[in-house]
Image 1 (cartoon, rainbow, N blue to C red):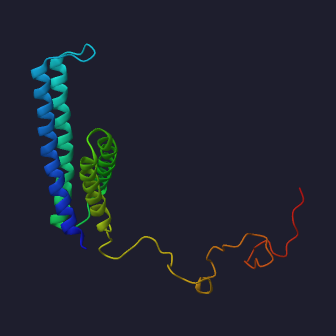
Image 2 (cartoon, rainbow, N blue to C red; image 1 turned 135 degrees about the vertical axis):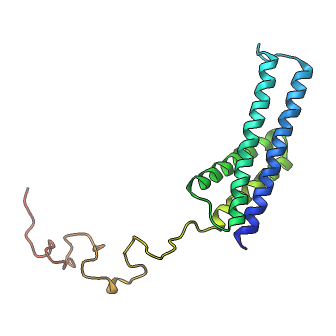
Image 3 (tube, rainbow, N blue to C red; image 1 turned 60 degrees about the horizontal axis):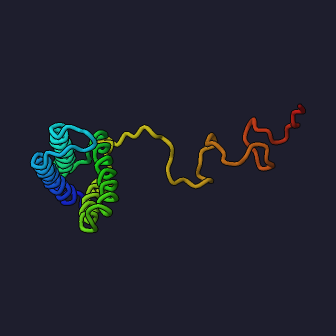
Length: 179
């Protein structure tokens, strides 16, 4: 499976969630304004404003995450460092909201949030990340070499002072220092 369809699907799902979150908070604000009740002495107008602000912030956050995923799918390239951070926080947010939703709303909301989280995580792991286009890696250590193929100056894995320590200048054959 390629990462492109997954990223495009996840981006579309997050954009739909953004619209849904704003609409849900709009309905909550309308219910608050029709009831005109205060909760623990809070001003009802402050609660209505807070509901709209929370819906706007959550909607903007989900829309930004969806835009990053759509850009990832269109460009066929992994998101940058901050894009990955944003998507990881999006996945964690979906996990926490899913845990809360299973108790408050039900299993259908939990399944929706876990499916969205799975799409975000799958789109993160589908791309291997930025590669060095010139092939000039800064790590010059050989990979996959056997112990017999290592150069002489390769660091030894054996503990110092063992009988098999035959490194030049090593402690083999030297008298131990007394304290």
